[in-house]
Image 1 (cartoon, helix red, strand yellow):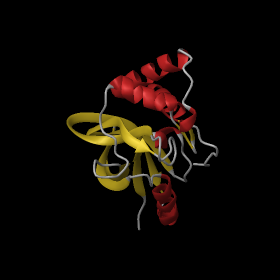
Image 2 (image 1 turned 180 degrees about the vertical axis):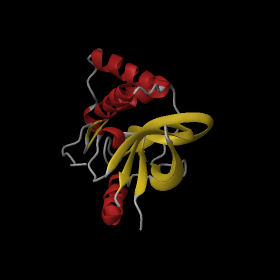
Image 3 (image 1 turned 135 degrees about the horizontal axis):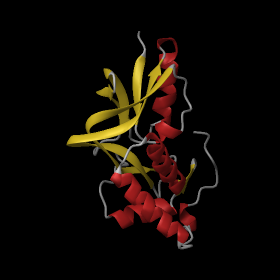
Length: 191
């Protein structure tokens, strides 16, 4: 078994709770990051899902993120941790990861249209409203998008979908509209 590169495009960018031996900024091609996946286990609840990002096949597009080299010695344990973390409809897929100095074969987690939590596209304001109001065991859904938006900005990546949704979530939050109590969780998960 050899080391394996993992590409992070969502919370894996800013919530690194797994061991790795190297970290590099990179990108993948022909994929777009979209808030089309329902979260019933982290940022929402089964009766009131939040929205988190997944990858959508988009010819010609580029999606920036962070790649982590996972050590061969601990690969089975690390993948087991990640499989549990990404259990809400995500599956591992193989894909090339591009760096300034070359390309490597790697993996990422993607939730496709056929998983039971897939929500798909919706008007921007509907996506933002759902995120602004949703809470789950891992906390507020708006925390997820604000962390992702800030992490992408820090890396110098421009993702209009993320920044547009984040701007709308900020407007909703600034308006003082309280989240519906049915979206509030009573426990916190350590993921």
